[in-house]
Image (cartoon, rainbow, N blue to C red; front, side):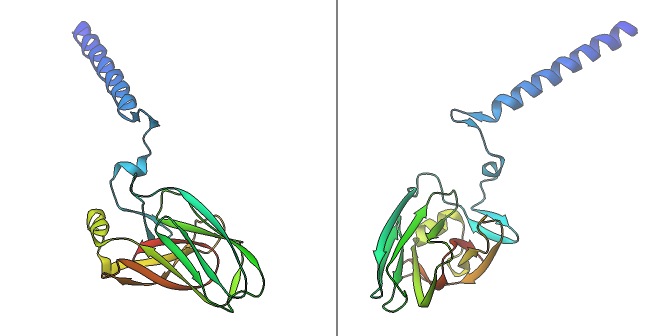
Length: 183
């Protein structure tokens, strides 16, 4: 009877070791460990109650741009999004920066803390097909902004999605990180 218990215990240990080894190798890909948040295939990640839209791999390019603008305003664009600064919105010559480099459908503007005399317009192109592939209702699409530099506190601003132009527009009066989200 004792030898049977030892045999079963040994088999159990062998099975557990094999299961752990399998689990560890299953969590790795050619690029290293898989991030746990990517396993759920959700189109959003929720931070402080705001559902931010993830940018599907290969759908967008991580890029940045800068533009010198004066009191007459101007436009800057990165990766399917653009910011239009109207005449009179800036008090002086300013180098505007715009970057997209996160796994979120987000844009970071600089210089940090810049406010406008009159609202600029942020426009983000996203097709109905892309929204459908992500499982997102176009009527629920909105824009949120990071209320702090660490991007861990978000507030939904709103926005208006135009299914004909296939873009969302939103007036902005200051610089922050702005991201597409689901209301």
